Amino acid sequence: MFDDVEVLDFAGPFEVFSVTSELSKGDSLRDSFASRPFAVSTVAEHPGAVSARNGLSVNPDCTISDCPPPDILIVPGGQGTRKLINNSEVINWIKDCAPTAELVLSVCTGSLLLAKAGLLEGLAATTHHRALELLIELAPNTTIIENQRFVDNGKIITSGGIAAGIDMSLHVVGKLLGRAQAEQTAEHMEYKIGNW
Image 1 (cartoon, rainbow, N blue to C red):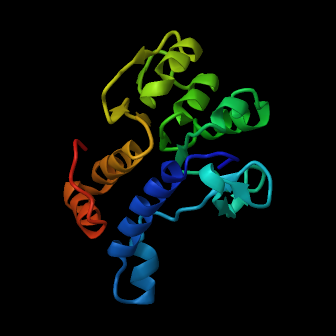
Image 2 (cartoon, rainbow, N blue to C red; image 1 turned 90 degrees about the vertical axis):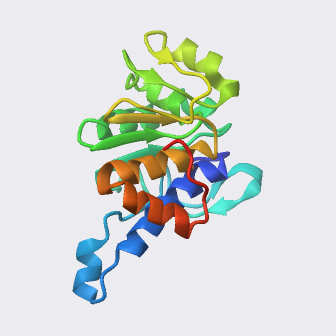
């Protein structure tokens, strides 16, 4: 997370993965820990509150220096990505997390940061429709896909703007836990089943 992060870019996936885990809980305490597929955490470069888009103050769980290696890394977007493109600490952290992560996801202009980290080289990707030209500039060896909610390259998955991150996250739940689990999560969230 970072200043001027788009709220739904992180909150949408946060809700999907958290709800999936909540719905997966067993009846006993032991079953509860064993069956929760996702432990969701928020991460920022520095300690303290992050001022998200439109002034929402959010307190991340950890920083890039004390965060355990993520199994799934989700890079959100927002206007703040324009500054982060030139932040070598954040770009290097993304680059360092990618090899050991099972999946690397971006929402909206988070794909710009994946591009800057060299993670989209030779792949297909998407982003917010107003940032397509910038993504082309940052990732000239990437096939840019327009008008698609998300693009799944296997390990690297990018989504279009803002709400598309929910579709991508439900797709990932289905990919890892099965379509029925994704549908149960969507139903609980009262989210219309889309193209995931």
